[in-house]
Amino acid sequence: MAPEVRALIFDYDGLIVDSERVEADLVIDIVGQWGTAITYADFGHLFGSVDADHLWEELLGGWCGRTVRELETELHPRGSGVKETLPLLPGVRELLDAAATLGLRVGLGTGNRREVLERRLGRHGVFDRFDAVVTRAEVEHGKPAPDIYLEVARRLDVAPADCLVLEDSVPGCQAALAAGMRVIACPSVVSAHCDFPDGIERVATLRDVSL
Image 1: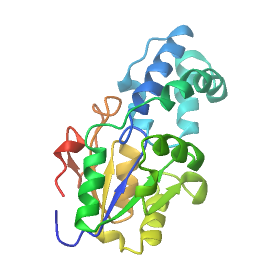
Image 2: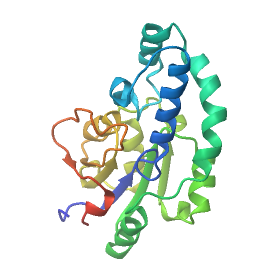
Image 3: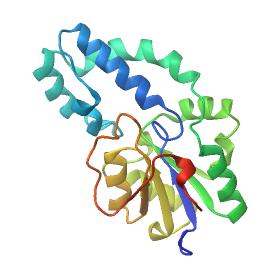
Image 4: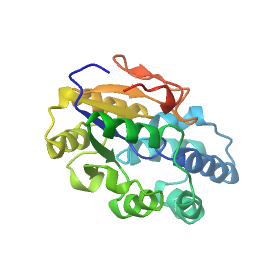
């Protein structure tokens, strides 16, 4: 790691747990029941942002004449239970350990809700290992705007340029770059096909990240 890095910042969905795959598979199934066959390549670029409803409306309208509200009505009851049982992805715990050994500050910036994070990460005994947690509800704009990551850095009392962000999505990488941070992308199966922005590093698994 470059010596100027003083903080390690994680995304959550798709990076710490494989929740993006769960949700994407349900989207494919639901839209398929509505009469249209789609794949990750049709919508994976939108995952990572909770501020993309207008783009989802366009896609759903074109695919099958449905709305985001209709999709969410089907999606949440079917996905919530599964997401509660997901394990940590390979490399997460090891990176938390490495960051602690090196004396790095550790943050989490996500579109998910704090109560969900407390419950799901608490089940794995790691929620308290984050020095700062910032959710979409706590900032003006979500990813791909830089607000979430800038607020994490502020709470960690670390300059944005001294932060390393781990992300799995295109909007998340765009947000971290816009915040002036170094970015390593570890794409999920949902985003692996996407065109990621220039200026990032890319790994196949978090186990490939060396601190």
